[in-house]
Length: 544
Image (cartoon, rainbow, N blue to C red; front, side, top):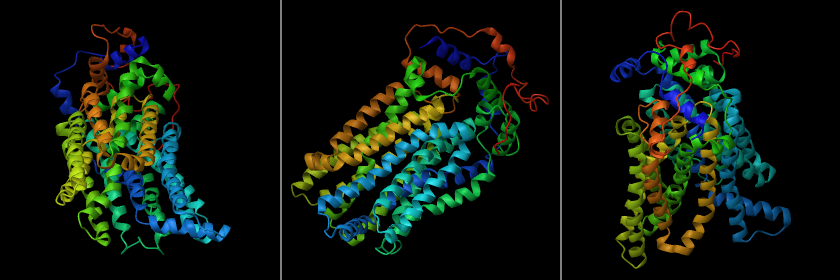
């Protein structure tokens, strides 16, 4: 670990001022009396136009597949007088599907600078512009006789999802109190699962999943974006962003009071003031994270977790579900209703995990989820092998494995992964960390989408063994490197990372003592400190 990183970690781990009181006492005084209604409504408003859109948009594209492919072929034939062959239509369709992942990667890279320049809340609001342009393109593509407009629309929708998947967990993690941080941040996964489920429902042939209505199905994502655009401006910005990034202490306190139901907790404000005084450097870039030895363990963990979430095969099992249900004897016209059960399974699992995360902890849910997925991959492979050899009853075991695999994914990896960068990086490193983790996630999703058809063709019944390997390696790696972050401050999490990943027997250098004189516990919310900025050189600007 570099000297600067050592000093920063130790300074955060050693709060200045008098000796600390009993560990139980601060924990109790730091908790507000109840959950603020403003916080709950902020979560709903941000998520309905945020991670909900990711789940909704990966779901609604499945129902109109045949209709869009026909539109591609008919449009090409009108232009050139000759239709496309089936492999060529499939190639264009693959490009349209892959454009979503490439847009997500672009959005992930855009999310970091955007969240620093305009704030977390304003980033989510501006992000809706990509969505509205995409909706306009799909609504007019048939009039313009252009399938290229669908490709561009899916790219823009991907940009929207890439930004929201990074900014929203950051916004939630910085706005929630410590004892609810995991549950609030995990709500991102709940809304993602809800988006998948609702997208499957809206895509039914009895609703918008028909040939005349498929453009309206693809454009229906504009409605949640409009809801967010009308509601989110009324809710507060992230308190940490206001204080640490903007240096606006008064706006931070106003935001904190609203989010905590009328009072700004003393210890929470003190913790933010300490972090503000210590983090004097400018916002880090992704490259600076790679160069900082003190942050490499955290960066490795975030990259591994984000990559594993997409490489584990959960999205692929949604694709494979149709064929499994067909082999089980379910009529093709009824499969769409059974498929809704897969989305409902992930939604139920994410809600259950949201209730458990502050009791069980992040590490156990994440590692346990990958362990369960590893087991189900083995059972699934055995069932597929026996099914291919004529054992008819194995089709039902395969169906059970589909639901069990999705439930295991929703129970841990689906939600915990998005929380990690918000909890293990400080304010200056957090946007860059989300850029790196988000890039890994979208690149992995793109690779799985492109390679999975070839994996199925080449491995047949053994096609889920690569995913089993990913789950096993992820469970082992994260179990060895990731400390429990439940209910811990950044200082405590940093110290745990050093214990697990740092050199043994190396004593950290303590920061200079003068830093202690800037701040004393108990003074953070005095009548004068509430109205005076801690740094006269900082600019003031209320983002609420």
